[in-house]
Image 1 (tube, one colour):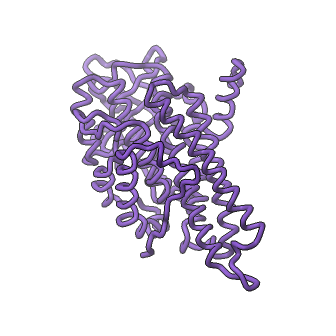
Image 2 (tube, rainbow, N blue to C red):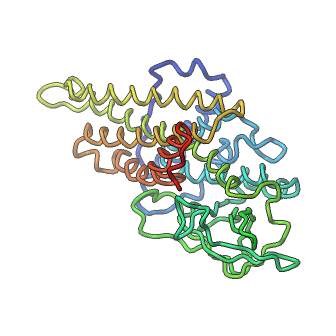
Image 3 (cartoon, helix red, strand yellow):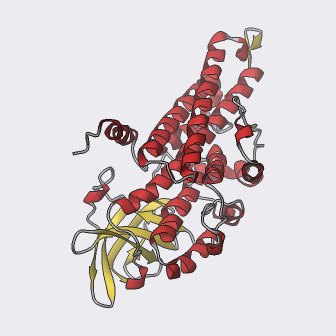
Amino acid sequence: MKTDLYQGHDYYLMDELLSDEHKLIRDTARAWIKKEVSPIIEDYYERAEFPKQIVPGLASIGGFGPYIPQEYGGAGLDQISYGLIMQELERCDSGLRSTSSVQSSLVMYPIWKYGNEEQRKKYLPKLASGEFIGSFGLTEPDHGSNPGGMVTNFKDMGDHYLLNGAKMWISNAPFCDVAVVWAKNEEGRIWGLVVERGMEGFTTPETHGKLSLRASATGELVFDNVKVPKENLLPNKSGLGAPLGCLDSARYGIAWGAIGVALDCYDSALRYAKERTQFGKPIAAFQLQQKKLAEMITEITKAQLLTFRLGQLKNEGRATSAQISMAKRNNVDMALKIAREARQIHGAMGITNEYSIMRHMANLESVITYEGTHDIHLLITGFDITGVNAFK
């Protein structure tokens, strides 16, 4: 087990914009990660296994639905607090943040926003405590960037719904207790249904052979004439806008999380450059290494400012989907570029698991395409500024 040496970096004194509660939440998450997760994450990544034993601790730091009201088991925190937790989690590993943000934004959020009071009280406290793990079924084998083309469907059978279809690339699927599944009714309208493990015909085969997000469990959701009780339909919103609203919340968390990856890579590269000696002096003394490091902290700082402002807008209920897309796209691209530069600063050591760089790089290759690809988010911004839809 290795020691987590990470130190935060705040070039523009962003901490002065945070409340004492924000800093306490962030520092609590960081301390838990350093003690409980960082020492084991490389081992679990190599084994392609999610460390299930950390779930209670993840719940204890607010990793599941931090902005969900306390009456439903959440912490009742604001959106900046949520972002800071995601930043600390992804600083450790994107798969860790993925597990948390799926639970929070893609499972708890729709039950809270689109469900009724009975559904909120039934599911949210157990999801907040980690007793239940959830997954989100939107992407299908033939429908990724075009989720509206989904073929998963349900029919009204009088006293229940009959659900058929399949979803893939689903985080948490192999061991989820519940799944929020998006499917079309007989009129072609999209609705969310809560499907519970144990329902006959519902299976969750695991996806193997991943070279990215290996410490996060991924699988399929398969529905073969699954009888879903009518009370499991989320009644308060339908249409494609319902799942896309969930994705807005998750993409917002990713924008913060990507900053965590970038900070971890920068922190490691800066420390290594000061310690590694060549030609009689630390490589940090060479101009090209200083250029790399200076550009890294500049891009991180820009992303921090962008995302903090987005958090303020989220707290005020004014953040738009297009603004969230811009932050997700910019920050993940920024983090991937920084990871690649950090790998070069580390030289050959950068490809070993003694450092987190290559693991971050591999993880980000998933993050840059999931929940809206790099190109799709660019077109969302293009549509927003021109009013012309390039998707059709």
